[in-house]
Image 1 (cartoon, rainbow, N blue to C red):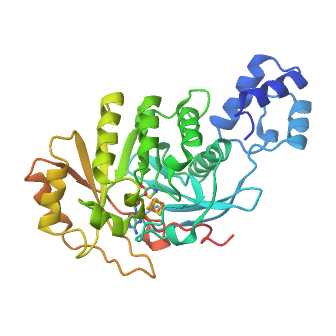
Image 2 (cartoon, rainbow, N blue to C red):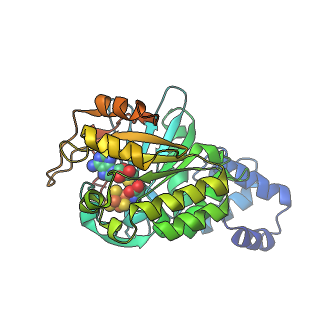
Image 3 (cartoon, rainbow, N blue to C red):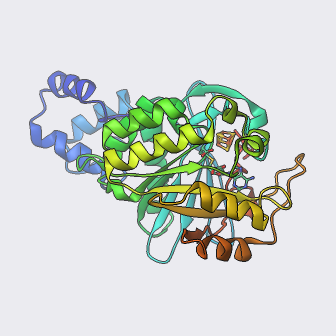
Length: 340
Ligand code: SAH
Ligand code: SF4
């Protein structure tokens, strides 16, 4: 992405003998006004504008398609020059818009309830590619009159911690005043629970929210839903989460997907409350979104399950589900289902 990599940009500054304030102007056009063409940058000298427009593009990827629902949710298909494509989702709330970004093309984790799982894994998105995905979300929100984009959640296609270095650079870029200037507290990363990477992320001391997909209170059941459990059992995962809280001072969110007759009984609530006893955390209950070809159905016990946890002293919230109409809700994203 243009003007993102400081070395590349320094090269352009040298080549065109640009004064430092020009660099600032270009950055403001790209990251403040979301200009997608150098010709729009009216305070640059005309010859420089033409030259830059002839030789460079602001982004190498493009929005190949988009769809919008009545609840204001937008799904974008972002296509990269090699043909790889991912979906990003914009959700409009009362005063702001939140972007849900994909971090990989496909996913290798194979969770049985997720539409991404069966597609397998193609490749990681690089740090500049992730920044472009975020940039397209900003561009779309600005150009289509959505509320200002203030939050970013890495909960789209892919496992963010399996692409940790690029994801950390994305968070740094997103929160940098020179680029997207988004507070780290407005950023959340959701993980299937990769233990070594949770320890590594803890050392980065970011002020983001870490959300861990739990979805079951014991290893046997969790393994049926999430094959990653065989490698990373719950007790070890919780140790990594405790370390994360100590290192960062941030409370962990545990996501718990309620599936009818599978993990939503009173007994499961009790087991979950025992597992998380004394842990400074928040449990976020998620309603299952149906994925064709899977047997899982949404639970009808969400409110009861919430009360059962609260009675045992657990902090609980229920996630609002948006975008199901266009398969844009949690777990429904598939690489390139939007037709370009
Ligand atoms: N790979 C990461 C982040 C992407 S998935 C992770 O698994 O955490 C984001 C969230 O959506 C996860 O909590 C995931 O378990 C959940 N999810 C997956 N499939 C879903 C479905 N069919 N309905 C509702 N949520 C789902
Ligand atoms: Fe991958 Fe997350 Fe879907 Fe599991 S739920 S397959 S980790 S994207």
